[in-house]
Image (cartoon, rainbow, N blue to C red; front, top):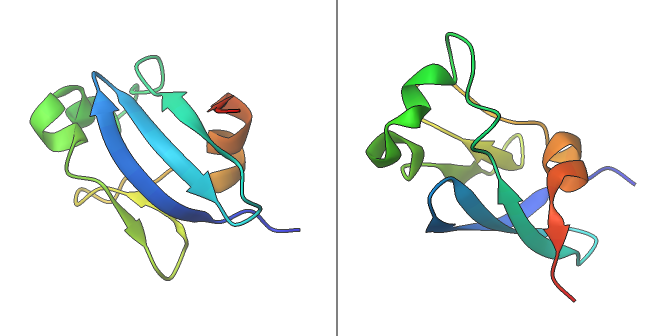
Length: 81
């Protein structure tokens, strides 16, 4: 099964609550993932909060072109029971 992000909501800090197409839900903390040319600008919380789920690639994206693979997010996620 291919993983797709269906819903994403900002929590606090660099944490996002995610729901995937397989029904799994959880929280991912991206505070340690914002390195490199594309992700460094997202350390500004105002920019970080401006993500959305792109309907074409079905993952979270930011206006500066940054995105994260659904598989990466799924593995990093703390599942909500």
